[in-house]
Image 1: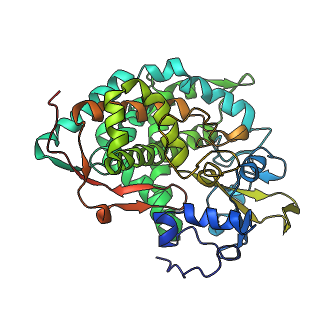
Image 2: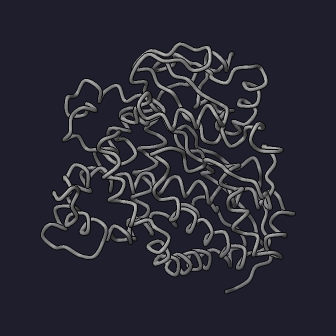
Image 3: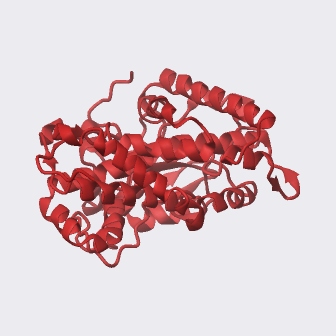
Length: 411
């Protein structure tokens, strides 16, 4: 496990894994903007830059010619770079729509989009509602629960499993793998490699099984699909189902948990949503803006500039979509959560060609999870605010969220 050295100068030596940044990064973004530093810099691990304005983040996200998505981790995977199999110019490398560039990206993204269209996502709403009710029934009589571990964490892996045709009872295994890969693995290279191999081996076996025993799940459909009249390459199928598991679990788990944390610590907002349930869609967008979970990296394909910073080819930029969503130049009172906010063009799901393909699924899961919880447990509060813990780096969200709820509805 890597030890994180404390930060003395956020403008010249930022650290995404600094405990204070993980617990509450907004003051750092505000300080950088107010001191005239829209692009912070660090030499930790690799020279990297951190834009903290909406325009800075969005302009980079939309410039796929200058900024490659080949390596999206907020920390560089040095071990992969010398391996020819993992080079960006290798057409046979395992890749997904999130870490591919044009010309591969567009047709492969178009292949995946129909699975996450609003009509496709609606097929899973009823299942999600029943799942949420069943989870709540499991702890409602206790009068307390850890909503991060016992609720938010349990929903996305089971929905993803249903889509992929995998046993939903593997949910705990999936979250262990994803947490090991995305959270622990960010600061522990050996852990990242271990969980990468675990997930890869699992999907190689699943793809092999669907080749012999096809069904109506996403893996089976991809195996019979085509791109430009040719079968979808196995490396593309493997990369995209890997992406579904990794990106589809931690991000939505974190978004649901952050919204519940807010409602547990802001009773006026919680009570208003109970009294005005029609406001929930607007509130969901505000939770996404204020607690956007994802930070994503890009790599410079050539020498360029960011403000007055000279960037060399191969250096990394860390796109903090959460920071963009707190920019006062775009959002009034950006650090306030205003659940009836009307102007809310947030970038919680990214921007540009890599905007999250699963945003409709994430919104549905998040909406159902919050709506169902408020229906069954309208009154709840934090057991101890100091007991709440957060993960950060690539994905930020609560990992322990203990609450109590003396008054509840047995639905």
